[in-house]
Amino acid sequence: MIIDPSGRIRLVLAVTVIPVLAVALLALGLWVAPDSSSALPAPTAATGAPMLAPAAASSPVATNPIPESGAQLTAAAWRMAIGQAVVDAGATKLGTPYVYSAAGPYAFDCSGFTQWVWAQLGVELPHNSGAQWAAVERISLDQLEPGDLTFDWSFGGGQPDHVSLYVGDGMMIHSPNSSGVVRYDSIYWWTGATTAAGRVR
Image (cartoon, rainbow, N blue to C red; front, top):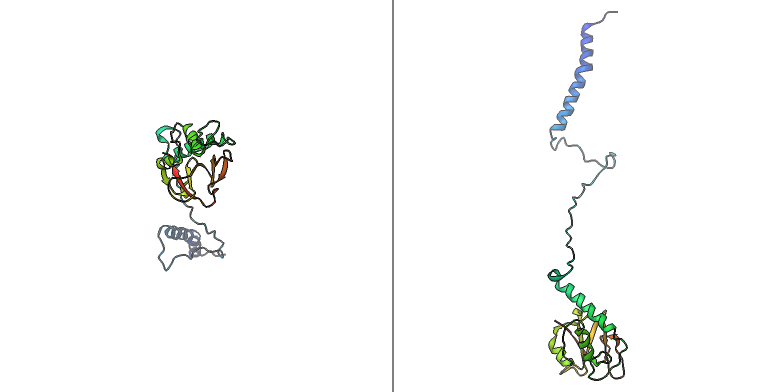
């Protein structure tokens, strides 16, 4: 058998040079961005390549601690706390009889009741529904919060005829009249009356 030296050289070149050239081209392809004419097609479901959406960067959500006391309390938190305390004081007098001009603690008329419950929180109100109406900040009915006062006019003018303590959810607690006791009612309990609201400051 005659071995052609040139054939051996060609075989060596094929085995060594071609792989090295392929690796060099592959490396060059990784480092040189292809232009639009040579860009690879976007992976699709047909190619089997997974299509992963970039993960959205999460940013921390700032949370403010709820103030506990003193000057850090917001005005809204103050109203909620005081208003609920007033409502709780009023609830202790459920069933107490109505007596004209009485201001508690064993009998009440309407303004005597609202005067007494606010006095438990150290707030002085006059013992008269008209005077209480003059003393409060006027608010709309849709602004009512627990502890606010509601007022009724039987004929829609002059001084209010009745005052009650709002407790929430359209309800109030009051000392209604000589035939009743301190109880819960809707703020629209008095059919035909004009109703308005005020906030104690």
